[in-house]
Image (cartoon, rainbow, N blue to C red; front, side, top):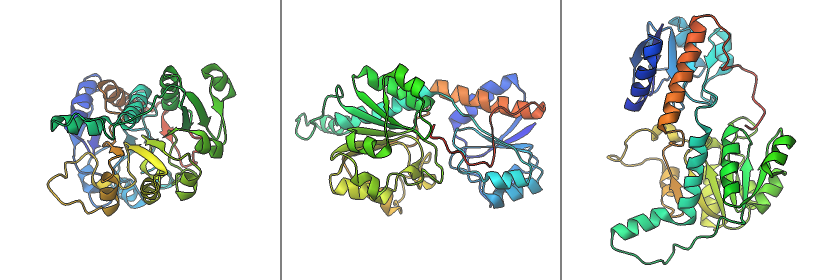
Length: 338
């Protein structure tokens, strides 16, 4: 099979080329992100492989179908950038990587929590400039604090295991709570309102759906404890960014750790340091010294990259061999927070 990759970086090529030694597919890599204007790059391909910042909307899928592209393979877990109804209409299956390394994302969420709490990012720049004062670097003990985890899928459960090791109380919310898991992990499922009201740290681990889009808005922030630390390693549009900025300005949000941003496609995974930032909202967000933003790198470990390549190519091989697609996603809306 011939596969055209979009939105690739050198590390993608390295991992996929290595894993492809077991499959023997023909690859064509492109750095540009897939959209309706550059589908010609997929001419002659049997499948396209895309990532989080590629756009497979109805117009794009229509064009791919006209070129006889037979499969859309996501090398990520999220699929909100694909019009699944259009894919079904043109009979193009969509497959994804549902889990690549829950440890990687969970550990990154903890990294953001600790960096913000102990002001590591500020101390780093100070000491490089010869400033070893402690003013403004006061943190708090994680032990005994309450963490609110939204969604209790694989990543969240790994994060909960880590936070329990700190001696934290964990509150969780999920549309479909798992009482057996709660008993085993010694956590408590509560309503979103209670989670907002009681948590010292809130971490988001749910998919982006119509129900979860902008779930963290002005109303939700108003229910939170003053000084709450908010962590998002999931999807950017879980948080209404302008509402977050207001929460930061009003000191309601004590700190925010963001590995995602709702308009990240224009910036993330690219070096834009040589041009003026024209996203005023992003620029304002980056101006806060109690915000740490990373470039959607929670997944970015050697183990995760290898797992992504293995699962993606196995998905494509299953399609080529006409086997059941274990990781296919369909047009039915996903309701569960996982």
